[in-house]
Image (cartoon, rainbow, N blue to C red):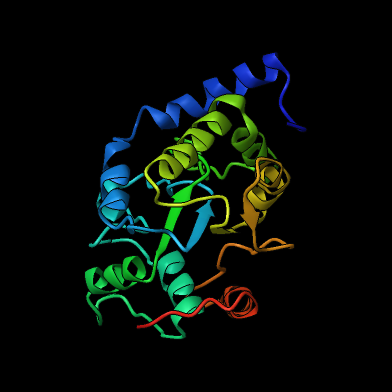
Length: 217
């Protein structure tokens, strides 16, 4: 795969990011996501990673039914798919996660631990995030996850994949395409700048419409 890091640089990045990795119970993310795994995935969204929160009382994640933090990614993706403006605290999120599942939609992360911020709260530059996503260890874990889903007949190589965020698109589009996966977006879809970001909403809606994928709310 092109763009793999030199061994020395890989070690440096691993040391930096291990500080974050050790701070989180990753099973919380896996358990929450697997609860809403469809019997058959029609569209798979691959985002960057779970978000980092210095204050655990404000943690948020796409599949958490209760999130003290913001719901920007979930709200925006949901609107792009269903043309419905989900609003936190007004609608029960569990019901809408079920709709996501019933329509054969799922989201997984390119990296299983937070890479958006360092343990000191400082933002990780996008260039470094791309390198982390491309790390052989992280890329192999992603491929194993996809392989396991195929073995369980949850997805196949015809399953549509949408990559969310420029870092994910740059790091993975060519590699996953070479593996035989069907990536829908030919250009990157940015992370929402705010809830209901029309650039993200319209990009997702257009991709689904162009491929004839219909959903039911």
